[in-house]
Image 1 (cartoon, rainbow, N blue to C red):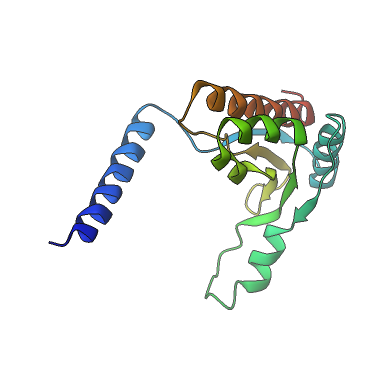
Image 2 (tube, rainbow, N blue to C red):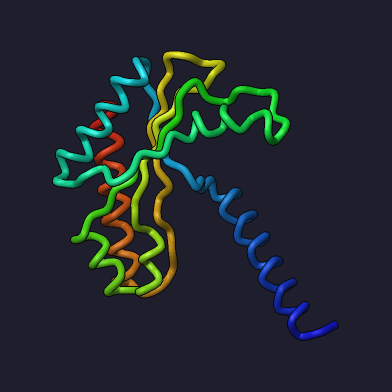
Length: 161
């Protein structure tokens, strides 16, 4: 077996072990809060919560509309979302701290918060984010924890959790 194949296999095996270990520990790649309400109102509340942190929504991706529009192209028959958007933004302060601690942390900017309503559960709105998890130095972990706390504050403020 070539060294390249062994390396690829090793990376794949480590990825599977990491995934199994985090699943057993109860770790999830998402943090989500849910509430009853209007999608438009909750999305506005999330936008306000971002603005209240002194930040600006740079981009809004209407993922639900894209999935619906392309469903026939990929042979999909199930409508997953009634509404689904990703609100993207960044913080110069938090990103600066993260990239100074580890230049790879640029991958976490822009930050995104999802707001969605499932097609089979109208009126229940979900607001969440992906916690930025990474290894590295203590400074890097602290900077990413500050970003996670920012995202959690925004999601909690928007959902009254």
